[in-house]
Image 1 (tube, rainbow, N blue to C red):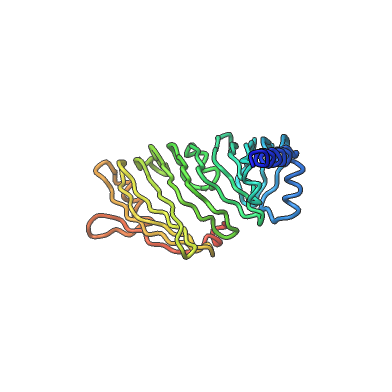
Image 2 (cartoon, rainbow, N blue to C red):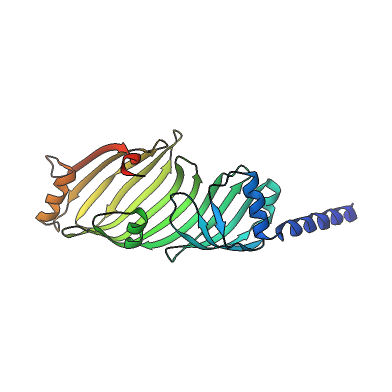
Length: 255
């Protein structure tokens, strides 16, 4: 029995090593031909086990460069590819784990990065104002569907500032992301410190319909310009807070 056991282990190990040693360019070409991958790779090198690509191209995605991965070879037995990755977005490092199913569906976990506010502004193409501070992404899990990414995790905007006419200190903003069973992504938003207290939530549905329900409360440090700016997009309440309720569709905004 022991001899058969060791023989099976040897055969299994050999097959696993052989598969994982296939050139990455060859494996990606086969995977692309047999599934509907929503992205393409340029400058592919290395093997399935440890490989790299100079650029990842995907519709509506920011420039992703210098991708490298380390494969979990046992994932091949489940007809999927799972790998720890490291890549750059506008020269900012992102690490995490990516799983690609044989169907082409993509899942991610433990995605972490820290970006400058100015970098995020460039990524989301914010036309007005200037974002300051550091924004940390800590994504526990994400499922990338064509219509709506279902994300669980947190976004922390530390030392947040926004400058339009004046610079507003927003303190530290915490955004908790969580999908619902109705294929809606909910973001719970709150902050600590700063010129304005912020609390509320935003939702995004798979048809790109969104809702905003946020309450702003000026603090003693908020000057009249800040209060007047709040009154431009939020309704003042009798208790001195400002309420923003809005709904629409991102398609009308060009997303």
